[in-house]
Amino acid sequence: MLHFEQGQPGQGEEILRFAHRAFATEYDVDFPALLPKLYGPQAACEGQHLLLYDGECLAGLLALQVQDFRAAGCLLRTGWIGTVCTAPEYRGQGLLAALMERANRLAEESGCDLVMLGGQRQRYQPFGYERAGTHWLFTASARNLRDVPRAPGLALRPMAREDVPQALALMERRPVYARRSAEGFVDVLRSWGCRPLSVWQGQVWAGYCAADRTGLVLELALERPELCAGVLAVLAERLDGEVRLMAGPWAGEIQRQAAALCEQAVLQADHSYRVLHWPQVVRAALALRALCGPPLCDGRLELDIEGQGGYEIQVRDGTACCRPQPPAGGAAVRLTPNQAVRLLFGPDSALVPGAQAAPAGWLPLPLCLPWADGI
Image (tube, rainbow, N blue to C red; front, side):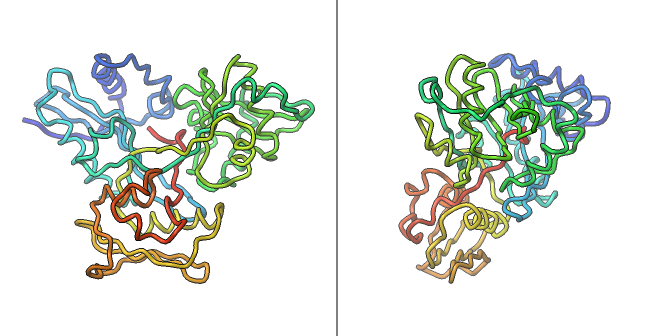
């Protein structure tokens, strides 16, 4: 008989053994190294795992992490789903569907505004998840960086414990951030194989970054954005190759610095999203646009989202809002929830049915949550 249980203290080793075994058929994953905030020796995050048993035999599991983000001052309660897996001998029996349906219900009960995950697109589309959100990926070659002038004394050093308070304060000045504890800050930055580094200019702490061995920079925060090119050049020297910087989709100073320097700048899909509360998520994206992007022209967009009701997005005299509204007959764009996510937040929004109904220059709205906080 299949039944669910919430992970309990002391089950960490059982969860890790199961995840290693489940993923071993496709990937060799060192979970404590990949996600120390969730599977490291001090994590104690068993309670964030949903376990599916067949009698007394563990047959599948996933992790659901719920946390609050601030996006341009707007609160977004967000669920992250990860480590979705089933035992090899149970595959093809519908266990993935059972896990995802229960996780969706738990996210709703937790008051999440949206839920996010990674993974293969078609695998999770049936459960309401769609590839959307955007982030910049800037690629700088060795030639781009060869002649970059650097501030005197610019250096990168492993992040020390005494660097954490100022790194936390700098992080909380970013347009989007999650509350991180001082004790767990370094483990968050170590996610996905990254190394947390402090940026120094002489004897002055100047920022931080998290970069992996392949040259991918998942997070970069600087007291002076004009140091961006020099930081990328120092990283390129260490790695003897190109550097790729992920950054939010808004027009911030670091984004402008990177765009003027790098060989490529691509706006690409972020995660797979399932939106539970449209007004909250759209308001956050509109606030991000107002904070960091060109102003939206006055106009309105009416959506009739299948199974979730009608909504009106309006901009008037520079003030933007999103509110529920009964579908207005033929005036509303009728979409599935997946299509609505793509239309509003996806890099391919222009290709979604109904895109022509949006006022010029509105879409996509910026939405991106820091990868280091995900699971």
